[in-house]
Image (cartoon, rainbow, N blue to C red):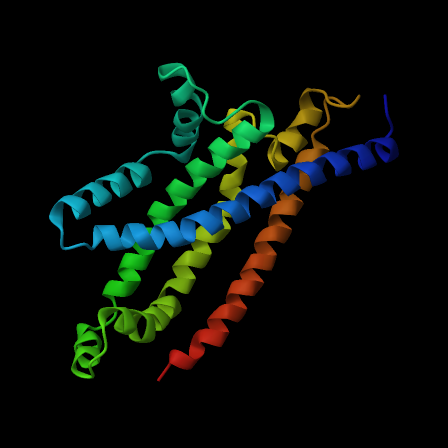
Length: 229
């Protein structure tokens, strides 16, 4: 039986590897979901009824079902139904499937935040821009976008901090993220078993990550306070 001083560096190294996987999944999700969410929001607000109906239905389904189920379907559906494992084998395949599921899920949530932010801008400002001869593109980027960003930062920050914790759901498809790494020492890993204390350290990782993001978003909100009259 290894002593605590012998266990700690082994556990710490394993948690760091799991945390790196968590961080990669987090940032890849944001990189994909933030722009995709804006595109989806345009689709849901489209005056072309078939497009808006399809887009809103997809958003309703994604927001109305658990992310865990979506992860399972994304990962297993192609192989079981079409007999074609499009994700590839091993950890890279599981990571790719998890990233795609997270991107679609969070893009749908972000799209509703975008839509609310855009529709909260008084229409009179759009009309004023048209009177000044601005194109729709110019009105969006010079009038609507900056005000929208100011209004969506609080709800977006909440969703992004939630994403930090939601990354732990990827373990349902055996992705070896932070929680997976901590839980391994309960079942037996690298000569260590029956130890629950590594799970408490996983909580510290999440707290620190969430704390850094909270401070960052507070600074962003202060910088955007110039919109106040």
